[in-house]
Image (cartoon, rainbow, N blue to C red; front, top):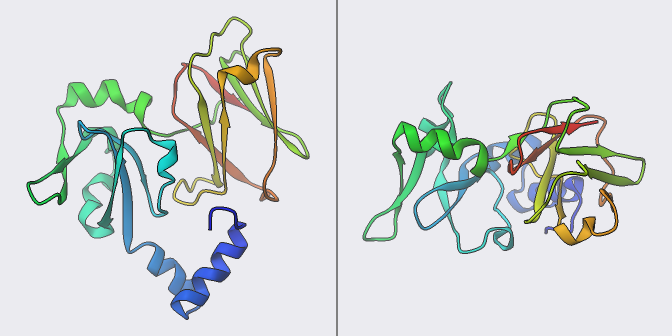
Length: 201
């Protein structure tokens, strides 16, 4: 299903549950998926099943959405919580200490790129046919970067994932990658923050 367009995925979901669009929305919101590291650190939270090839040495767990409601309380960050496995391999949400939560918040969880500043470490932009990722010439990239394109302000629905490796910047500070699907007029881009300053254009 990962190769289907968002429209095709919606049509297939409607067929599977034999309902209309509202039924699909309700069904999709019934469960929440989380990806976590051996120490319980949460890397992903969403309504769609994650691609575990993106997460090395991690596990995923399918919660009833009502059981993780505490993570959606106003003013709460997912970095304030960890996942604890009990002796029956059942996962539970636990509150972590405040100091640890602060240090992990920006590094381990997805952040939306909203800045339009020209003083950037990484600049994410698009042309008619390509995604365009530019890095500051002084920046040394030592690990891959992933960018997640979603409907505007809705990180629960993934439209496209773009992965950029350090090798792709070997000959230039700019990398271009072809769009997979037709873009909506408005969308958001999220990433795991490796550097301080991300901009979008």
